[in-house]
Amino acid sequence: MPEAAATLRTQLIAAARRMTAAGLNKGTAGNLSVRCVDRGEAGYLITPTGMAYDTLTPEDVVFMRLDGTYAGLHGNRRKPSSEWRFHRDLYAARPEAGAVLHAHSPFAVSLACLRRDIPPFHYMIARFGGDTLRCSAYATFGSQELSDAALAALEGRTACLLANHGMLVYGRDLDQALDFGVELECLCEQYWRACQLGAPVLLDATEMATVLEKFAGYGQQS
Image (tube, rainbow, N blue to C red; front, side):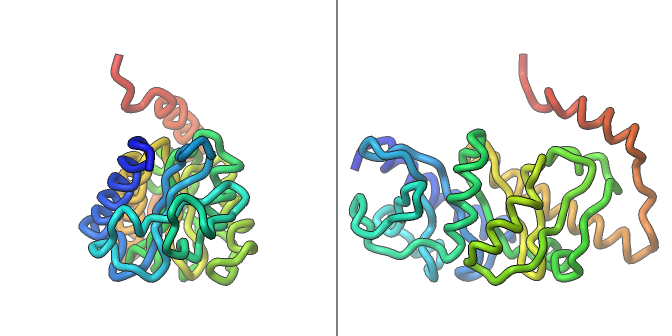
């Protein structure tokens, strides 16, 4: 396989293992993908279904075209994650998306099971593009209905919760997608803990607009 694609396969596996080390997933839960061009074809690499990340080799990673096909392509020998649809649809809808992460992390799942949006209890909510973090409508895992619900919840955002399911984030590359996943789980935990003591005091729309403006250049070095 081309060197660039081979390198991305190795990087994808390493990032998937970091998801587990960060406490975002256990066992075979969750999935991760990265946009790529392999042998002249545009598509993405995605973790296979039903395999623990610590057992993966580069040959287990699945290449998928943006039309959702994968069988017999580029040496594929595994089936892709059952959630490949929202990966495909995100890459098609968001040109800026370079990597997509889905996890069943404890606090994100807890809030998703309440089907609760996360309000602006903390200014870091703006890190994901808006003044709330939305929870999508519920749909069966792996379905087109779930992908449609996820993309609706991601309108103007880089992250959302999936009702009774988990989290979904995207970033410009694998590192940023993983960072966003860790940050989202941290915010979910903080919100959950604050709610144990009462109703958190929320930041108003004016303050969140100010924060959103500041985040436009956040983390950029001159």
